[in-house]
Length: 111
Image (tube, rainbow, N blue to C red):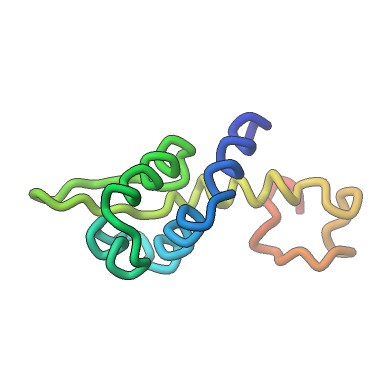
């Protein structure tokens, strides 16, 4: 991951509603959640929600799929894992075993 991609992703997550949306989608799994359900669950008006979804999508943290007239959003786990790996790749001077970093956060190339 390049630094500009990491900055874009972190910037997108650095807002309360967007972080809540992203966490909800991560918990929901690959099936995703409809925009209406996201708004309902998080009590975010749809007009406001669409702005936040656009920001997360531009940061490549979520994806959207249309089924009929309904839009379903889901987390892009690969992007999330790449961001976590980028943030932890040099943890403890490359000696990840010395850190308390969960192994899921360390990319295969850095073990």
